[in-house]
Length: 373
Picture 1 (cartoon, helix red, strand yellow):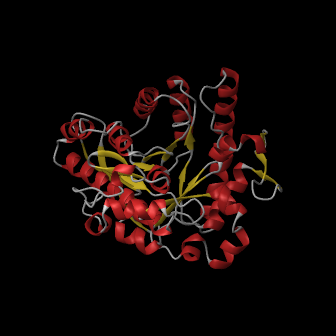
Picture 2 (cartoon, rainbow, N blue to C red; picture 1 turned 90 degrees about the vertical axis):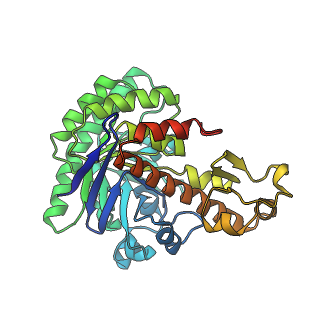
């Protein structure tokens, strides 16, 4: 069995599960650190193992451009190339087609783009993106999609919806051929549809006809208000079967974890904890803390008195503030480690709350803490 639901929260859609990949079993809900180019910024693979993460997200678009598929094939795939032992899920490149819209055109055949590195021209098709992920050797493959921005004109949203579904059908056929050739991977087509719940329900229905292993939920966190995120995500989740794992793409602050799990999400990824760390921001039990704030220049207390990570046990706010102001590279590593430790502990706290039948109470308790939103 690829995915098994172990238990459900009686007062919400939160659930515990197990996702089996070709490189291990992942307990869900799970948060995946983002290793866009085969590395979680500032951390080593030993760091990821110490933190307890056994699944990461990498990006097909970036890895295709650099280091390139020839090098990845020669290395035996991304896992061996980066010396990582856990599971890997790969993004299709559809989000980059939105974020780098000035460098691409969308056609019926696929997405034509100029490399942001050297201006060279490339074409991503539903079939070629499956080939790319096969060369990467990831465990979970996504289908090429069109991710519409927010707000989005109705005609553009409809076109994105239609293309994503047609491309998913082509990607599914390409995926089945790879499986017949011996590939060991799971297929996660992407549910799009903008912020129209009916369109998203239609997308889910069509994608389920492809017998996918799981479903990715894309097109969120693209500029919309959070209230709309949760409203449409909740409506979308109602259209999904319990038997399929649900992967919410690109959403994941500590508060987001609780809200997404409440609505039935199993997997999440986000650059938030690593990106804000490089800007001097730490997630703490007292809310967000900017280490560059002048108040911390002489503060000899720990970064977070309630945190058990090695950064909080060993280093003071004053020292971390000094490192960050001096642009010492260790500052970025320490804050990144701490933030990912917080995310990992948060997920463990969520899972314990579901297991013990007190998820809603634990969620309300967390969201009521100072600085939690």
